[in-house]
Amino acid sequence: MARYTLERINQKIALWEAADDAVSTGQEYSIAGKRLTRVDAGFIEKKLDRLYAQRDQLERGGGRVIVRTIRVGR
Image (cartoon, rainbow, N blue to C red; front, side, top):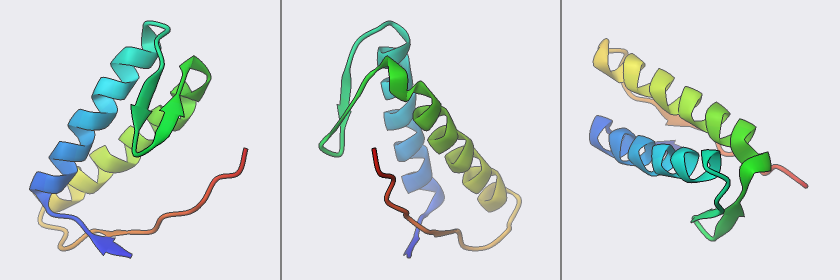
């Protein structure tokens, strides 16, 4: 598990927003060694939803954010 600061969450949001922009125009995008394409738009959307929720929690003073990473098989 990892603890993210508000600054780090904002950095991650910026990266995933860029990926979303690239994928939405039909392009491929590479992030963390993984190539994402249009079919991965749902994955990107879920990731952004979680990051925005974590940011909202921190901004409301909800304390630290614990992130659990799971492996998704293809």
